[in-house]
Image 1 (tube, rainbow, N blue to C red):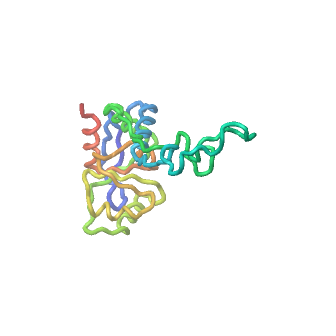
Image 2: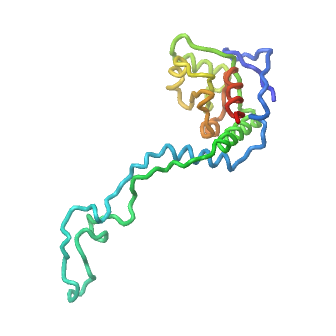
Image 3: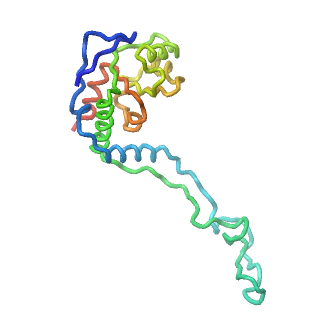
Length: 210
């Protein structure tokens, strides 16, 4: 699959970039995408929620009233979950929500997500560029030039570029990542994925590594 290489100004160059079929042209696996997105979201959870159970409530353990003869239900101590201020039954406790996913499944999920984007013509490739200074207006101008200013975008750099990252981080719906940090959730969540030319080969090598 070939796409036109865009200049920084948004103009099409005469050069075309070939997107490798092994990454951008496979038969997508929906279940792999589901598992990888689920794993990503689970890993974001802190899992620090906590409520006090009966044995953690401060208070007397004395029996409130005699067992029989009152005409009411039996009652133990004030920590009973049925009473106001009592412990909570089966309440949340701190836990780790993350789960392991095999590397091959993750690679398949990323390839599948990128293949979907390629089929939808939602992938753009820019010539390699860099900003001399960090300036949000420069990044916004670039998005406008390639007609993606009103879209949710993911820019994939070959390596971390401080000025580019600082220029784009305050723009709503614009996310920036590097080729070695690309993940299924960000690809699926974006309307369009923008690759810098040299990042295409890096993503190919990363996802086709045995």
